[in-house]
Image (cartoon, rainbow, N blue to C red):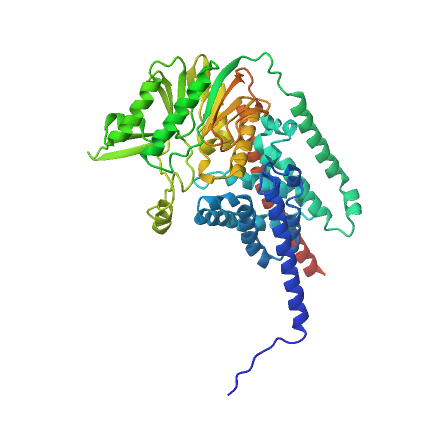
Length: 546
């Protein structure tokens, strides 16, 4: 018997075509929003980024959030989250195909949760939902940098790093206040586009627009008026070394070459009479402490001995990034080995103090679920990763009367970490980084732009000594005053302003604006839901009486 193909009734075909057209339009809008999102940051088209695009980047996404039904909003979250971070973090492909898949996938899951929340707010507050949506976005960006998977890249406020008067407002509200000011226009404009006429809609909502302009102007004016006069500030003459060799991509011969380059560049820097010399994160790979004590590899020990011979008799102190390895005897009597990504302060050849990295990079430095997700751990272990244990102490070094702390690698992208260093007494923040693994100038610029906010949040100088870029000096006003070109060998000697007396609101109160966003956002959802239930109950009772 011949099979028959069941066709939908002719009346259903126009409806299907309409739905298909709607889905295609909405996916196109989400893709446009993802592209604008990525272009607002340093990107593949222009390495310094088009920061004004951040103010409209989310307009297409907010339009889709309103238009799409509840069934489509969840897969749209998957699509939008993956697209945003695949385009924004395109440079992860230089690390591995696995990396460019995992990070966007994590954000796809986040957006599966975020987009429905934004739609719920849109539904509960049809008139002023844009305000609560903005707060919800701020709360989301704060929550996503917490816990093991915390990843601070892609926070929209960071796009504004060239706009220094606004960036300096971070000393009041932190990064989160800047994010609020950046996201609000997208949510507001998307609401205006809903009405029969945008001009008429704006006329009805002009108080909200005027309030935003007033707050934005006040934030910019605050940043302009509070620009610090650094002409009379005491200075600290720092030599920053950029070796432009990734010692992880090699063997002992590469380690020896890296040491030779660091010594040669430091010798050049010493001609300018610095107060201190700073090498980058893991500028020396073989563990100084381990190989000095155990000497399991004669060649690695010779590398360490060469370093010690150079440091011995030096007139200035050295800050050196290195792996801190040690063996400990557990209470069971077994011997266990511990390894840390660390910073050492040396005077001559003696260790003054050691800082062990507190916040480890997910997957590449730390993977706590190896016993549960064994298959993923095998994939991670096969890549160029270096697992570490986490430190537990906010260390403040002291040299020549200057107190400083050394956030390592992406630790300079977490506001709370750097705030805590300052609260512990740091006068200067010294970031030690190795971003050479990405082989991407854009990656290095994205990282550097976040350090700008750490300087302005606490009104402290931030210096960055990096393996391949961007080695630079950022003053307390957020201005990059000196830098070395990325992927170039060089040394930078600069006088860094030392600020000790300034204590900002952010340094005192921390992420208070993010807490406000979370609190108001959660409260608005609860109150809105209760009001909706009350309206439905009242309507039902009225219907029964009639």
